[in-house]
Amino acid sequence: MTRGLAAETQAHRDPVESAMRVLTDTGAFVMPPADLNRCIGADENAWTRFSSHWEELVPDRYAAELGTRRLRRYGHFLFRPADGYAELLPHRAFAQPEDSNPLYIETDRYFEPLTELFVEDPLLRGLLRLLGHVATALDDVPEWNAKVTPFRVLASADGEGQPTPEGLHRDGVTLVTSLLVGRHNASGGESSVVDLDGHQLLKTTLSEPGTLLMGDDRRTLHGVSPVRALDPAEPAQRDVLVITFAPR
Ligand SMILES: [Fe+2]
Image (cartoon, rainbow, N blue to C red; front, side):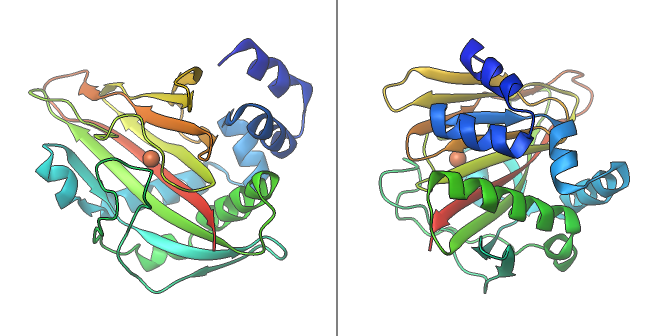
């Protein structure tokens, strides 16, 4: 984290206030797990339950075509900041707009829907409310389209796992966020956020579950370095939840 970001973070005790200020000023912010737990009222039991949803993910065949073992599901919600209302919308293809992800521009990809238990999990609901509130610092819109993607990247002894096979990219949204849910036997997986001129804003390895990285996707690009197995006898695993907000 840069010195400016650290100073800003300390200057504002309310983590939501900090997130909104730093995100607006610099374009990227990391919220530590203790602050996130305070914001959404999550405890250890809540995290144990929440992380169990990652056991229900299914292979991403598009990533497999690029040689990466990645599991995922996908769902999208309508979010209304005025009253914090979040509604799961009918399942449909995942498309990223023009001028964002170079690998998948205007390509529809079909992913399995989120499980019912995941959709109703209070921790997810708390995250949607928090992030929907933070998003209003970037843009004042009455309704957001929130895309929710739990990912698991795997790497075995003979290869690396690519969390972002496309490299540095934009998602074509307003707010892009990445929450670390779990890491096992993994090295690497370093997150980078750069501005549109390529200047680095932030470089950090999300290592503690509950760490939340947020970025203003309109003026930054993000990417994650490859994941490798520490112990070659078993696979490396990196579980994250990516949630993006774009105006409806
Ligand atoms: Fe992305």
